[in-house]
Length: 350
Image (cartoon, rainbow, N blue to C red; front, side, top):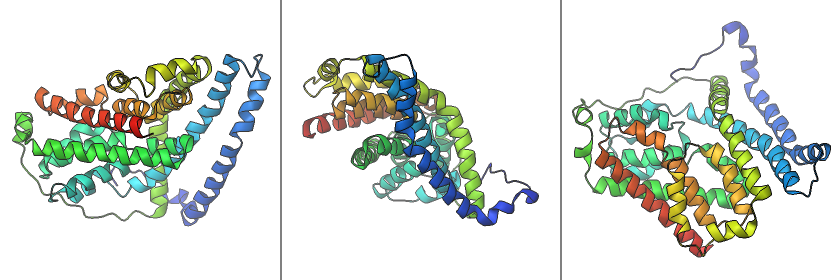
C-alpha cells in the first residue's frame, strides 16, 4: 500500500497480538459509547440552565451528539482504513478496466462505497481511469458514489437513525451513481474532455497484489483515523452546533411547513442550498438529524444531504481542470435530476 509507514522492528512486538488488541479496543469503544447518555444528562444538570428549556435541550443535544458522532466516526474510519488497504488506486483501476458498461457502472459505484477517495483525489483518479481505458460513464459512476455513499455517512446514519435509513441511503446513493454514470455514458461526451486529457497515452491497468499483514492493516486503520478525523472534526463540531440550535430553538411547525411533504418546492430548494455548501457527511448529518426531529420530510432532507456531499462546489472546481464547462454542466444536471427524483419519490411514499 502506497504511503504506508511501518514502525521499526524493535517496536513491532505487539504485532503478534494485533487481533486481540483490536478486540479489546472494540469492547472499550462500546463501553464508552453506552455511557454517553447518562454522562451528557449529568453535565447538563451541572450547568446553570433549565434542562426543559430551549437552551437546556440544545446543550444536551450538543454534549451527547459531539462525542457520539466522533466515536462513530473514529470507529468506522479505523475499520474502513483496514478495508481500504485492499483497495489502492492501482487495484481499483485494474478492477474497472475492460468491463462492459452497465456491469461496470454497478461495479464502479460499489467500489466507490469502500474506497477512501474524495474530492481532493478527483483529478488524479480521473486521469488514471482515462489512461486505463475506463469508459467515461463508468468513471462518473465512481466519482458520484465515492463521496456520496461513503463509510462515514453510512455509519453515522446507522448510529443516529438505525439500519433502515442507512440501507435506504445506500440504495438511493448507488441508484443515483449507477444511473447518472450510465446516462452520461450514453451521451458520448468524451469530446468534451479537455484536449490534453483526450490526448493522454493509454496505459494498461495492472495490480501485482500486496503482502501486508493484519498488523500492517491495523496501522493503516490508525493512520486513517489520524488523517480523516483530524481533518473533519471541526466540521463535526460546527454541524452539531447548528443541529443543536435547530433542535433546541426552531419551532417544529415552522420546519414542517417549510421542508414538509406538502411543500412541493422544498426538494429543489434543498438541492440549490446544498450544492454551494462546503461540508462532508460528518458535518452535515447532525444537521440532518435535527431537521428530521423537527418535522422536515425525509425525502427533502436526503436530497439536501446528497447535494452537499455529491455535488460539492470544491469538487466541481477541481474537476474543471480536466472537464470542459459543458461536461461539468451535464454531470451536475444528471446527478441533480437523480437527487430530485429521490427526494420526490420518498416524500411521496414515506
